[in-house]
Length: 120
Figure 1 (spheres, rainbow, N blue to C red):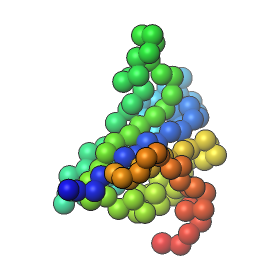
Figure 2 (cartoon, one colour):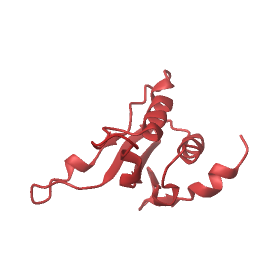
Figure 3 (spheres, rainbow, N blue to C red):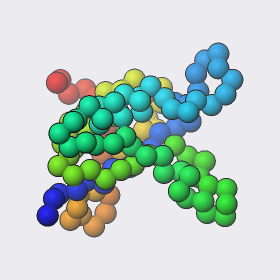
Figure 4 (cartoon, one colour):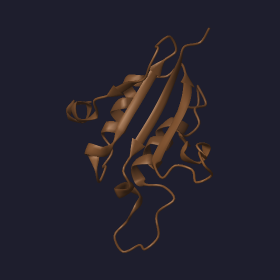
């Protein structure tokens, strides 16, 4: 059996706006950097985090949230948490990273502010 980590990343709409641009962005630099880090691992062939909001159709309106996730085998969760924490978030206080190990009964909210301050 391979160990799998489930990951959910949520952040505010502040990340999806850029000064001088009228339309909402398709992505943000922090998410792009995180996905580049995931896709750079050619050993495990991780894909990018997936936009989960369209999956939650509810009453047909979907979610109005920035929520991304994925499941990853043989995953360095500590390194990933550091990558997320070290991004230049516009609204860092609204960034939430939830992780769940394969045998865990629930997700755990990671403390990103402390990770961002740790030296590499």
